[in-house]
Image (cartoon, one colour):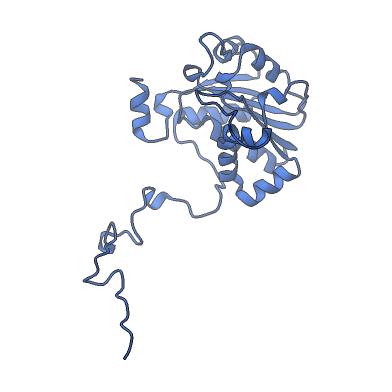
Length: 247
């Protein structure tokens, strides 16, 4: 006696139904990103999605030091890292140095297992994500293995001189005035530095963040750009901009 063959999932009497039928023009189920979802393993070219982002990209290209201030979702970190990758690919710099302050935003990391690098991984993860998006995982691992790309906490930057490098300091609103002053003086010959942060979202105690004060002081100097992004430059879900107006 022949075995009974199971019915296909898309047969007429199947109890399993796709979220959207093929007749709706969506093959293989619903995709929240729709037709805009990229299929390549990494992004080859980044284009500004708002007037403010265009100003930021032009400022980074024209200045040795740029401070990008703005709310969450305006693409500050992503655009800075994209500019760093483009500079590396064009042989304008020899290496990329990315740094973030190790600030516990209400959660303690002391209980996490592993050594210092493993404990720091959650803080540095957004930088890895942006790099992976621009380079692809395989190339990113190779560049980090040979030291071309370095990711380090702010505390490890003291005493260094960064020549022929593209330096990105992320979440600078969580740095004190003294820390930012120390970071700015790391800039060496033939290097570019970008500081990104949102002065309104500091995890430090009131009055300790030095980003807004530093930005005000250096804004008048030549070859330093201070770009202030606004809610209209947010490129995340539209609700992000709406929430930030009331929160």
